[in-house]
Amino acid sequence: MLPRKIELKGLSPDQIDRLLPEGLISLCWRGSVAHGMYLPKSDADSIDDKDVMGIYVGPLEHYLGFGRKDVYEQWEGEWDCVFYELRKFIGLLLNCNPNVLSLLWLKPNGIIYENELGARLRENRSLFVTKKAYHSFSGYAHAQFKKMISFNQEAQALMQRLEDQLISFGIDPESCDAGSSLRTVDGQPFVGATTDMMEVVKQYRGERRRYYSGGYMGQKRRELVRRVGYDAKNAAHLIRLLRMGIEFLTEGTLHVERADAPELLDIKRGAWPLEKVKSEAERLFQLSQEAYVRSALPPEPDCGQAERLCVELISAYHMLSSKRV
Image (tube, rainbow, N blue to C red; front, top):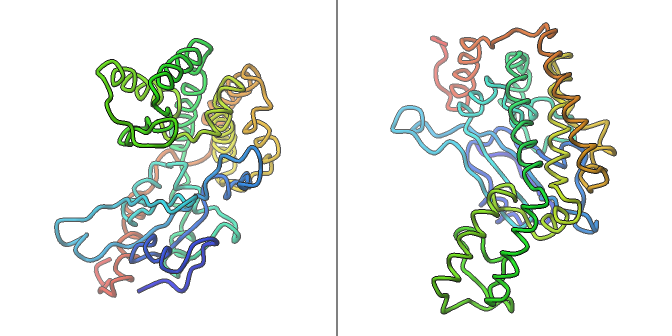
């Protein structure tokens, strides 16, 4: 059961075939595109990839044999793709994971491909509307808040000192991601590193993971962090997550494409001082707690009903008998 032809602008049919898993039932925009906050590469402040998320049904061996990998991450140029096996995806939905929950509330322009099984999953989204969203959205937001405030002036000075040391050794700091091969500042492979050099590289890699959101941050984003004194993209995520969580607890729906996108883009570009971001975040944390207390949503999902839906969808894909479902 292969999907109809899918087009992803900038990718060839062969590249798309390599990216997409067998059994795909849904492929959607996520991240900045889904939220209406994408800045194209032509924008001077652009630090965005094109993020998509897909759901697939695994082969029968995944369910009847020894199992298979249930999450795949793929990259192709600026395309950042993640794919979840259906059973794994539903498990995340039951915990109100903000990243996957959003896919069920996308507008048509957020859906790249969807077959009848993907549509049935979306039609049953009410199964996953519970107060557990408070813990998941607030938990993610707390993690973002902690990362954002950790990059203070002392941390900035440390990172600058380490980068200056690397450059003095002839090592390009951009080549210091974990697992990368060291390069010189001229782009050539670096050879002849001494013990002292490698100690600086090790320390820089550790601090980079600590302050630069896992170490994956591109150069433009790091320059923005240095300029404004905090991770502005991280701050925009923080404010968006809290607002979406409050809306969900109050209304039982997710507003994925953001009406407040212009304001969130201002935050993302670093237009808000850190103290304003912190003040707004603290206000929203309080409102989130109040929304949780007042929320009329059920406290827990009906796991039995969700399991039946999962079995029905997998059985339908593999054309299995559903008499016992």
